[in-house]
Length: 244
Image (cartoon, rainbow, N blue to C red; front, top):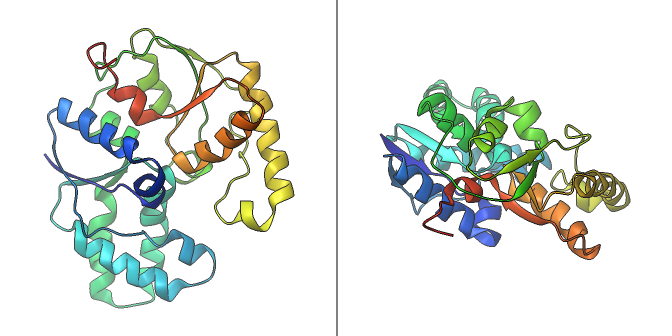
């Protein structure tokens, strides 16, 4: 299967190790993974802040770059949800031909956990991670992509990993992209609630499928010197006894 990695802006700029983990994991599972270098932002920030024309241009570029692949895998529920939810709406305001291209592209775009469970049909990916972990289901992955228990099913099969439930797991962490910039006090209060729940689990590691939310929560964890690491789901799943 010819798979394209859509790294996303936050990962490309701040968390490149997550993209490397996705490639390591998928190749271990037999996928032919490529990284199209012409890829750019998906346009989520533009559309969410009232610039649909700019977002549409980026959507056209995305479709051009990723055409021809069997699947496009993103280590970001947020950006995958942008493509799946917003691109069809943007395309309807343009031409029938572009709407058709988007309709053909959308079913090929997956969050990592979806691709592993639904397409490859695996939950045990051969990972080893002997730590106490709690999982935060980010808003887009929970409410946009409806990932359900796919990420936790994958974590439950990791050898040595103790998965502990996160109280108030479905509550937003307060990041929300530009929401954290425009409403810093509310955002910080929401993150404070999330961090209290995380520390109450006694987990060594907080895991999620979006580094943007992990970055937000991790900042508060660091300032409080809570001693809890943040790790993307891909990084845990890519870890084996041989790589530790």
